[in-house]
Length: 415
Image (cartoon, rainbow, N blue to C red; front, side, top):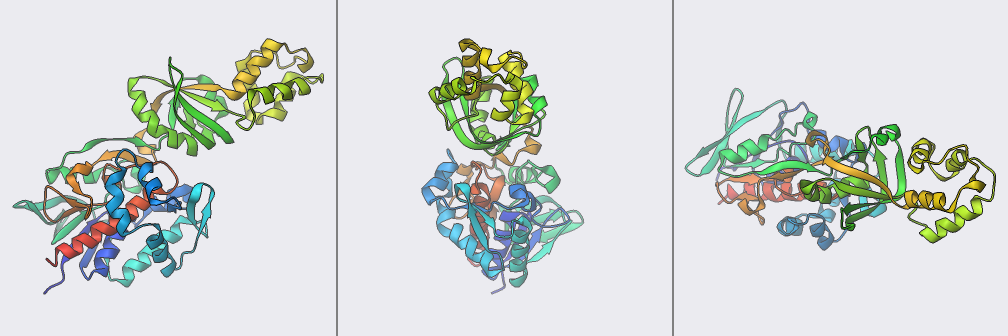
């Protein structure tokens, strides 16, 4: 019996896992990447450090992908975190665990992960072709027969589409897989930003551009009810148009839903370790001195934030703190515990960390990643309508669905 031919479209994390696993299963594998090198988005993941997975248990992983998380039970049961880490160790990558269970390569270089996956693929004879763009799928009588590339065709028993989403287009994620899925009869859930910055209405955020706040709490609050719909603790960042950073990226998944009904309030607690009563007692103690209000704030807040805080309190920065009134003290405490911003939109899709939307999970067999509509077609990674919060969850899903798709594609050719 001849070896089955598997073509994998897309050289990112999902594509590399699909290609490597299919080749391990003795398929003849061709990996096609339209860009100049493999794993371009992987190289910049985790700010270049590569947050590849998380120590969370299976149920926490599933919850992180709500509402579509249950789709991933099959993939995670066949290839999960320990399997990934074992594979990377075999090819020279040691890992470490940081806050929130985030797993990084010990070297703090995402490129080491990409290089290890390339070594794995070479060891099992994957033929990787870069600068090779797929023009369309070849489909006949309800099944895929290969792909058309610019300059010819490549026949195949199975094709894995692992082209990513539509965010970070400079890394090659330009939504090509959506067009391929449509060619095969699939519908597409409209792509939207996921793990995105938030655009805010207030002009003063521009004055804080580049300021990072650590150990703060941010909540999304619905007006006029005041109901909190999501809360995160950790680090955030001010940008020229709004806010970003880890906790904002995670909150953006909830914000995406509520922004469809209009603006939503972001409420930032700058001093979450202190209650309002504790803050009040501290200010009473501190305000016994004659220091000017503006100078005092330099002890309480990051330097870049002082002028904005003065503006928001409307208190004269030259006013001695021992003359500040009870009403003014209340304003200060209110801002420290509830600094409010108005989110009006998600950041642009091309700058989102992950794309929401894609091939609907109902059109894919969760056990094999096979298309339910077209024989011989498989999907893996971000092209599927799955997205999760930050912390390594999304990359693990790419690795797991890629592995399962490659395994299933190779075995299909043996049937």
